[in-house]
Amino acid sequence: MSATSAAINPKGPRLRGSASNPFDWLNTYLGSSVGQKILVAITGLLLMSFAVTHMVGNLKMFSGPESINKYAYFLKHDIGAWIWVARAGLFLVFVLHLSVALSLKTKAMAARPVGYAYNNSAQATPQSKTMVQTGIVVGLFIIFHLLHYTFGMVHGIPAADGKGERNYLSLTYKLDDGVVVHDVYKMVVAGFSTGWLSAIYLISQMVLFIHLSHGIQSSLQTLGLVNRRFLPVARLIGYGTAGVIFVGNVAIVVAVWVGWVKM
Amino acid sequence: MKFTLHIWRQPGPNARGQMVTYNVDDITGDMSFLEMIDVLNERLIKDGVEPVAFDHDCREGICGSCAMMINGLAHGPERGATTCQLHMRSFKNGDNIYVEPWRAKGFPLLRDLVVDRSSFDRIIQSGGFVNVNTGGAPDGNSLPIPKADSDKAMDAAQCIGCGACAAACPNASAMLFLSAKVGHLGAMPQGEAEQSDRVRKMVATHDREGFGHCTFIGECEAACPKEISTEFISGLNRDYIGSAVKAAVKGEARGGA
Image (cartoon, rainbow over all chains, first blue to last red; front, side, top):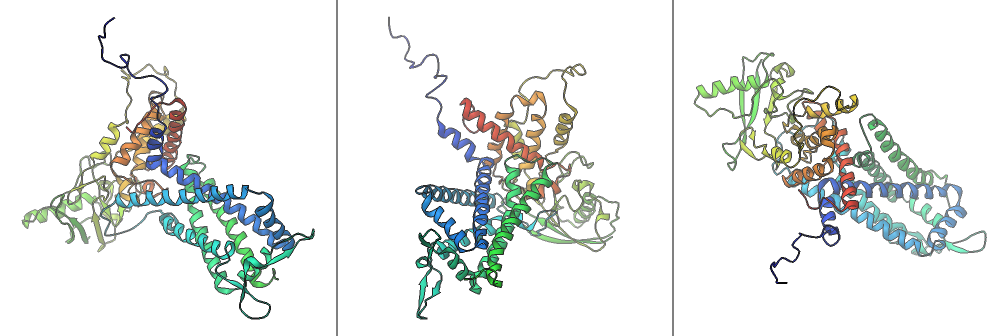
């Protein structure tokens, strides 16, 4: 037998196996504007479900210190290492949502190098045209919120002897079963009894409502879950969910303000 | 009727452009917007000034040639009408009217109000067709198609490719055009077989032509002279997800277009 052909695979490339590179798929589908928008929609809906859960958990403020402190202890202690899995996941989703949305926005800005002299719109809602701006405000608020309550770096509680402030994180509470835990209840009341802090929270909640009132319905449409008949329902779900998050969160701030929830 | 027109004048693709103000009178309410510009151009020619260049062809609202941003609205203030089907009775006597060309990276400006819309042709070339010869007219009812599907295909097929959607979109996205073309063919059994390849290729070409992404602002729907609904964009995304899943599971359809 003589070497008549120099071809490595005279019958052409393999049909299956080595030829398929998963990065091709990623580049094709997640590299396109539609794929990236779908990514923004999915991460957005995940963040929204976090916002709902967070709000519902915080409503435990209304059932007193025992309830909310026990819940906080459960999250931080009882579920063990899962809290770090949840935090890492949340962080990843947040970073993905932000980075992909901003990268799409820069491409969209490049898609119209020369703007119009006369700007007008026929039926666009203001919130739909300001998603990046409201999103950035919400992002900054989340950083502020973490600094305020999670790291206790923004504000303190006046110390008992009247000199200086006590850090939020040093507050303790004794549960009915004798376990000493971090006093979340007192921390929240101290925070929202302060006017300028409450103002920041109220304004941020309004901005979050504006962001979600378009974001939720737009995400549902992006995921292809909406047709002409279902569009009003998608709008209702959007405004409804955004409204529930707004009312729930604002209720806690207002309740502290008017004194329903106090030390 | 009298109007004060502010029209974008630009002698060539790389020349500097600016808004120029013209006064027109002796306009009747029954004149179309293009006829009003014809009147202006007649006068400009008599005065020895270069007339305003603009695209037009059928002047009956079916060709998709006329393309003008009028007071910031694509095809002007009337819903479901092209510029040629917009009549001056839609304006008040003495109005200031701003006329600008489509603005998008995918629509490079050639002159005055004329832009190059061949990017839309390239999007169609990358998948907006059926690859098999469908032959002559088939026997009636030999290929049963539900009425709802045929209505949907006809709704999408109304798209005349004028570019108003991309011009009106704050993101300069041509997604309504794209989704009408994809939705029209995908609703029919002849086009359905190639749908997952079609949607992937056409989206890739759309992005390559420099158009933006869709955030469901809804301006395109209002601008569309054929009143095509954004539900087709939802449908396009649904097909795109289907295409991605199919490609992942079967390992087929790699690469952009």
